[in-house]
Amino acid sequence: MANTLPESAGITTPQLIGFVLFIILYFPIIYFVPPHQVQKFLVANLVVSSATLLGIMGWAVHANGGAGDLVSPAVEVPRSQVGFLMVQGITSIAGTYTGGSDRVSDWTRYAKHRHAPTLAQLTALPLTVTLVALIGIITTSATAQMFGEVQWNPMIMLQIVQARYYTAACRAGTCLAGLGLLSVTVFINYTQNCVSSGMDVAMLIPRFVSRRRGSIIFSILGVLANPWRFLTQATTFITVLSSFGVFMSPAASILLVDFWLVRKTKWNIPDLYSPDGIYWFWNGLNWRAFIAYFLGMAWALPGFIMAVGGPTVGDGWHHLYQVSFFFGYAVSGGLFYLLNLFFPPPRLGEQVDFKLVDGLVVIDHERVAVLASPHSSDDPRVEKRAESADQAVYIKGLRCL
Image (cartoon, rainbow, N blue to C red):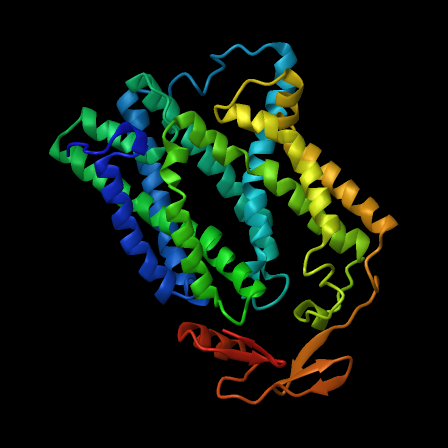
């Protein structure tokens, strides 16, 4: 298909058509599949994605006659850079999956008991991260030797393969591989981006936005951001994926310090849902966290901007970017602790729990009735049904869409 779009668009006509078709497929999934029903689709997606990735790697190694040069030490690195490059590799992986760990509670809330996700996180996550990275390295190495071009984006790699071997068998193979990658893309976006962002905005303005509506709003904003511009070059693609640590590490550190050191694992649960509670701070914003986050993240920005094609900066700034995960973690966490030490928030050490007994909220052994309404319930099954119908749920007097 001929490209009718200018180069400044950052996308070709076939790619734009594919993107529109993806959106047409994706939005009904957001609307009709609530989070508590997605597990069966994820099991099927695991089988499809595993077969797809292993199939692409097997074809690449077989067609090339080996894994290629990237698996062996073919690139000479100055001794002064070895340590920074090793730490940057750790930073890339840690940063990428810190984003997922920040959002894990959006899914562990559906667990039957608090320890259910622990085994999976300790075993399945490191195993899958290692295996998928290994598959990507071997596949890219083999195709780079075949085509003379290093391409880490599997979708673009399939386009290159089809352009070079435009046969019926090749078209069938790339079609099946493309469908497998489509399945992966849909459910990664759903689980890691869509549901999490929807829950976040529903938490901020529950009177107006439900989890479903929030997911749709952020998906539309994602389209308007022209995401294909981040993927126009392989180097930019890898840099964007590996730089999440610049932004996620300070946030993760602040959350951990707040829970373990500042509050010592004690929470006033009812106050979490009250604008008059101790967590409202200043107009709903904790200035200590903002200062600590910015000062932990800002040092890595010059190196990050250079890495994505910006102006060149000194070696010192680049090294800070390379170790940004650990540097940002230490700076933000330490500064946040000190700010809370010198400017302590109100009522530290206060703990108020709640539990449900016979449909009532129990706070400190006192029963508090739930508002009567057609949809009132503390049963999670009712919450799920209400979410599926986009109805309002009343819990402790708080009306949530």
